Image (cartoon, rainbow, N blue to C red; front, side, top):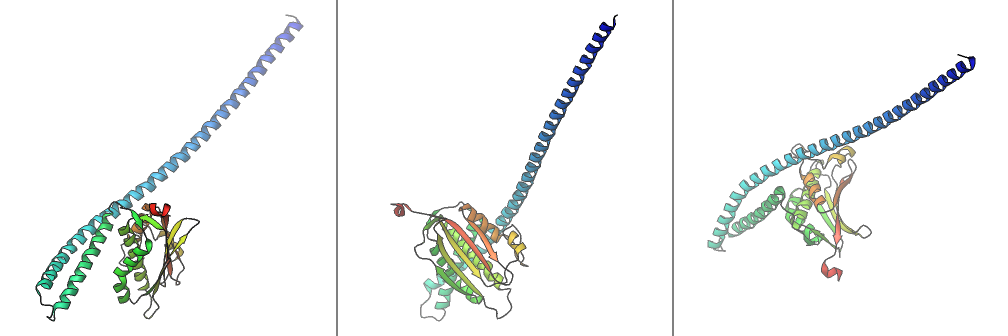
Length: 298
């Protein structure tokens, strides 16, 4: 074989080796790119799985909390039912005595008072049972101010006993909200009772005052209700958890009242939050979407 032939053969071998090297480099790059793509895809799937697991965990916790609330609601409904039976019997007996008794008898007025108070207790127990049963919402066009008057009227004796002064600053001409009147009443009463309990922790002789006000935020089309008390206030940490189920700083608190408040307001398309500083009282604010009735629209 001549030198020229050997040179050509060597050159061909070199070309073949070079092509193979380039192909191997290209193939290696392709493998690296594919590996990187698969790694990125796996990382993305891992993140998605982690998010799904977290959502499942959150949902599980919510279901557990809902289960607890349902159990407490069922137990509460049973207790309220047991209480309502003797109240019904007392009401019936007082009504019978009132009918048969001579109005001039000295005991006639106390019997009338028993009759009136038993009616009040029956109505209050009925409302409470509606709340704990979490009945289907029955909405109508409602003036929030009317519900506040009704709520305070039911609680004014308790406010007086607890030595809590109160004031209403309700804006005239508020637009209606489309809501369940009984649920709104229970929401407002719950917040007022919560404020009374908070102010009950104040030192003897402290000023106890509850200011309830309503207003209309036209740009946001929201009716706002504010419950401002002079209680001990709520820390920043507690404000983050105060609406959580079974969270309570009170020794005898069940921790479901404000949770139900938040839940019911959310079902009305509204929101509730608290503004407070320790030792400076608390302001619970409810915002509900305003609506117009057919008469108002025309």
